[in-house]
Image 1: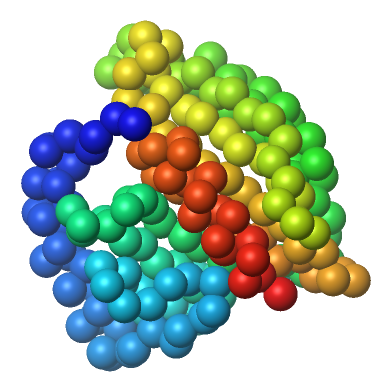
Image 2 (image 1 turned 180 degrees about the vertical axis):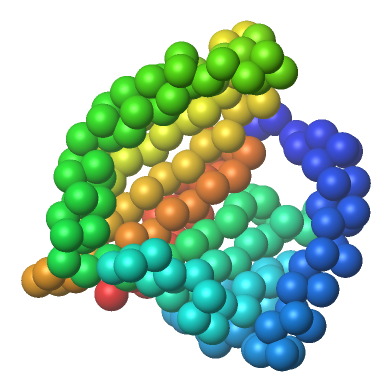
Length: 186
């Protein structure tokens, strides 16, 4: 299992004042705990209030465990989608190659000189855990460097779809965390 680079920790440390400023800027709003995101240890939960929403999609919780003693080092987000957005997300969860094609098309259409030299390769495959279904995806540079792994799982309930997204540097770690989240997603 690859170890995170020291620069990742340095970047995280450098970003900590920004995280603190966001927390203070949101009127010291304390995040509500949701069962799907672990608490304690190195886990931090973002204060969401109502500022992360996109039409029919609302973030219920976003958290991460990025400290050196976190195993695995992952971020977890839980969203609730309704109506048309829920149907669109369900289609993507059922056909992850649709997302891969979209990412490839965006990458090919990018004409910015500083990004044109760096091409991204995306691979996805179905991922199922208990009553939840979705996909796992890996994004990396064309030379195989800087991989990022994610699992997206959905739980439909009528016209609502709850989606859990787990992202991290280790494919095994992301899969493990996704299984833990799936066990708690209701």
